[in-house]
Every structure is written in C-alpha cells, then in structure tokens.
Length: 126
Image (tube, rainbow, N blue to C red):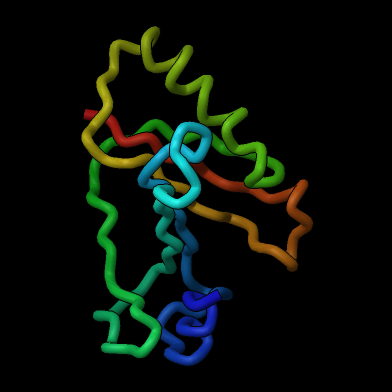
C-alpha cells in the first residue's frame, strides 16, 4: 500500500503507462514469513525523488532470461515457475545467473480479475 500511495502522490510511475514488476528475493514456500522479501516495482523514466515513503530505485540488470507467461492468480504462480527449474533448466543446458527471478505484471487488479491475470516470469540466465 505504501508503494501505491507513493505512485499516486509522486506521479513518477503511473499505473496506466508504466510497466509493473515484482522481485521475490526468497522462495515463499521455503522461507519463513518474517524473512521473506519481495520488491514491488514500477517503471520510471527519471531518478526517484526523495520521498517520505521510503521508495527507492532498484535496477533489474539487463541480460538473457527465459520467459514464461503465467495466466491466473499470482497465488498459483509456482505452478508456472517450478517446471522451469525442475524440467526445462536441466534439459536446456542453460545456467542460471546469480539474480532473482522477476515478474512483469501485464494485468493489474481490480481492472482484471485475478484468475485472468497475465504475468511474465523472467528467469535470468548466463
């Protein structure tokens, strides 16, 4: 909610014209809730101005990624992610880059019902 307030007040990352990202720094299935870290991000075109919300810039480094589209609630995104690591990665001969995966939210709630959300999952590769 803090990020949404910053977005509305600053005008630096309008929902209608900016891409929306999420970066999970841990696996929520294996990380205790108090240790889980997740960054909610919005595309910007200028430096983030100092603000009372604690919002700061995070740069997603450029590089190769495997991209898979998840359709449905983010609560079930693991059903799209796990096959990448379990099946595709070992068969592909590719290696992971030392970066967390990230999400590009193509749909947002409440404009789109969660069961129809489209989210591109990016897994960074060497």
